[in-house]
Length: 189
Image 1 (tube, rainbow, N blue to C red):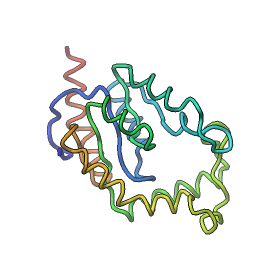
Image 2: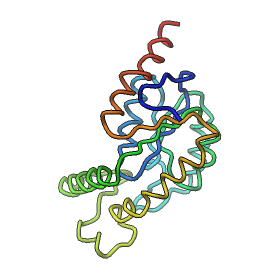
Image 3: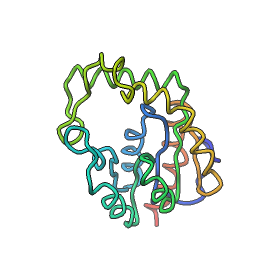
Image 4: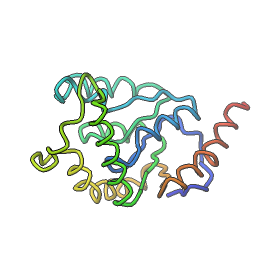
């Protein structure tokens, strides 16, 4: 397992970003996409249809984009996680503290709800009070999934290059350090 200052053994071309709900997977995926010039595919946009229903083409869509040579996406949704892992060459793990991810998740949820922001395919955050009535509410999901996500990454660390980033300082250090180094080497070729 690599840390934020460890050199990368290769130029990442098919990248997964793992972490708890609210850890910043989508944001980091976009930033990796920018640095390496990879196609970014947001899995939530492929998964969620209108009224939060799963899209029937989700698995076929994931199969299609992962057939390509250069992409970055989040490592989530159990039905495609094995396929994603099989096709990826690098996994970046946002291993932030539970307090940090819950704070981020709460702030993001409140901000999206207050703005009535459209997320994917016409969906928006439900009213905030539903955290008390919906056992699948994103805030409850984030809390329950924390340990599960950590075990999932640890279970695959022998099968793929894993970069573990704990906290935003380590994220920035890795982006401006090892990732930028391999991106510069790639451009110089």
